[in-house]
Length: 117
Length: 115
Image (cartoon, rainbow over all chains, first blue to last red; front, side, top):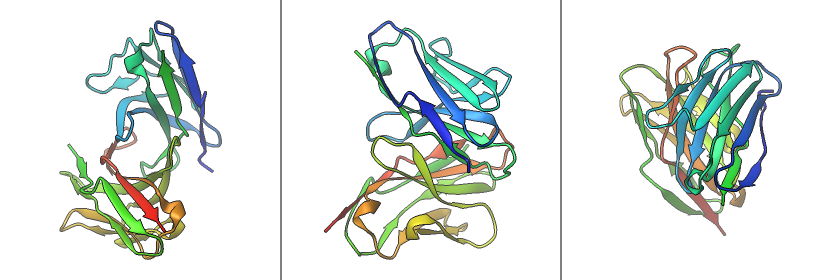
């Protein structure tokens, strides 16, 4: 149980285009989902916390107009990188918290590798 | 505010040798503690977690960790490593502040197991 999927696993796009990444909790309801960014050989940096049915909470320094997050259902959150540029190239990982578990444990997706040319 | 320190960025070890990956944390409140493993180009997999109770926590793949409140540490250990344990290991802390509480990660330790 507690499986999180991400789609796509890898995407290459041209500079200036927008890219949408989906994060799904497959066998549980996730009232809270998190989006992380990971640069090569570095730790995960939290970008935003997404709560179902409400606006996402962005971490300091993260542009909310550039990284649009939508959490429209209890099993799906999306991250849209708008007008992507080469510096947005990174590994994006989502996680989800199972509302029925009280441990604050997050279950992670497999990540999406974004390359902007 | 919370923080996590993983003192060793890389730990080389021979196969079948024991290993300890160090993790120290700071927090003004009680915490939950986690160790995650990340294989190349993959997401994070939970190895083990400390929520409460026994300070010695056993996880998957033969790993264990001990919570030491006085030293604010949560070191990860394995008595005999395998080549397949080569990966990046992250220590993380979360506070008790409800469902919106966040995970704070350490910078990671690269475990390199060789023959």
